Image (cartoon, helix red, strand yellow):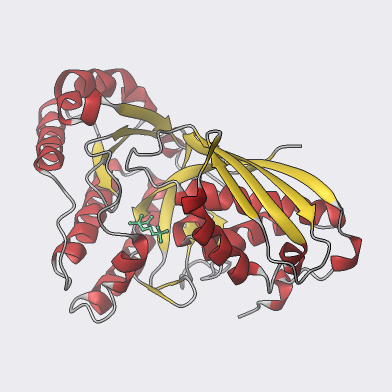
Length: 361
Ligand code: PMV
């Protein structure tokens, strides 16, 4: 694998002090990433929709150390409140990327970050947070070396974001991202995600995602533990094969706009993710009775109205409703009338596919 291309070696022209800014959205996987090898190498290819309204805005202030050997000071503020609980994750991230971004060792870090979605909402902020931080670092590289191409910035941002959190690699661009080597997609890589530039059926260009906050609590299974449950899992190899097939099928569906096939594939992926968790040792049940009530209500609504709305799930109890924009009015009405009752504080976040991370100059 070609790691050399990601090494930034111009450490003799570093600014003394600099402020960097970016925004980056969350994403929702259609074909799920579940199972990895070191370091953040996925066991199967995944495909996701990039979101738009759920994003993280990050300001990174770097102040040069007097000596490189000085211990790096890290300050993190989330919504203006000092959050030292983030320090270990940032320290680990900086250690993982120092080989590719040796300049990180020359600075003290002060990070101010805000999410547009509530912190304890069950929506993972690691994808948007890590990709926003990666974009800030690429803004610095661009300032030091203005020759760096836009394509390279996106590629390396995805590469760095992946080291922070695997799924973060898929937040850099939109509208659909593919991460992990796939035989049918030449440019695909395990090291970074790529935007699917293929002809996308118009129906998917403004697809909607309404997120039902069924359980806003902290994740019951951390990502690290979750992925490790696939090591030695009795169905792991079949699952990884299945995901590769599902990616092939989804690539066709995204061109053809076959919504029946889309809904079957996406729901089956979500349930398979949960089936993997239920059949691992230790085993976990992350859906709640309210999750099941929502899924049944969606199936019933789809059967009676023939409106093509389907669901997907992350590693938690919340439900994402996916549907074409033309059905927005009816689906929002359905959510208000029949589904909100299953959400904590009746909370729903309406989102849609978006274009990815941005550097703010
Ligand atoms: O990026 P991680 O390590 O938090 O893993 C994310 C895993 C899922 O959200 C369950 C699936 C996915 O592909 O996003």
